[in-house]
Image (cartoon, rainbow, N blue to C red; front, top):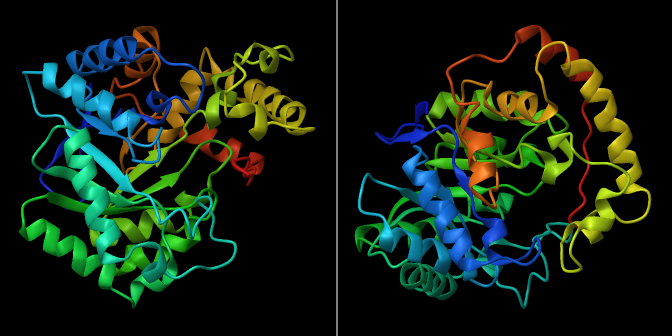
Length: 327
């Protein structure tokens, strides 16, 4: 396992982290004991960064991770979680109607979520707390940050971060330039390449750590999908709504083109996609989801210090695809 410095902090984090959304049950039925065994296996094999959120199964993902941490007695595991905006105001993690950061993250709500996360994760201090949705007026309206800094003084949190909405990396540019937070999380993969244009360079200037998510584009970039794949997903799998209508077919067509481009360089599209997600030097950690030990093995194998082929970076640029399927 290769390790990278987490922005301007002194943390040394595994470049492959553990994305915990699937542990909450949003992506189909999960077995908690299997999830715990998978987490412990990941820790044993060098992964020391886990990302979760209250929104992942109303805290269920946090509870499972907390149980795994209780059983872990070796090296430090950095745990990042998130504060969901007030749901009676925000029906979903959307910014289309431009809510204010003050409405979404009042003092009492931030404290309530942080205290709940501490209990569910069975810890006295959260390593990294992130706003699960960034509102750009947060640059000037800083009550949210004042509250988090107070919680930091109280010893409840260590670092502060923000998770940007999907396919809107431009939202984080001023935040990155300001250096207000320790980290910014953003969607980045072979389709969603835009963060590398400006967000990553601006973050580097202020020492803001970059966490990248969805490296396999919710499974599409695994390269294993066929026309029958959608029929194999469980009924409560979130991807049924994501790939409704013609979306699934269009995705398959685009994936086939990427396979052709990557095949001379890498044996599988999944390997190419994971290596691509790590190629920018500004990225501290990428957080793919993992359901079992086999998926852990597939992910950690690519952390071998080999750099992504620079020629292939250029060849992939015309295949950008700015798409949002979480609606």
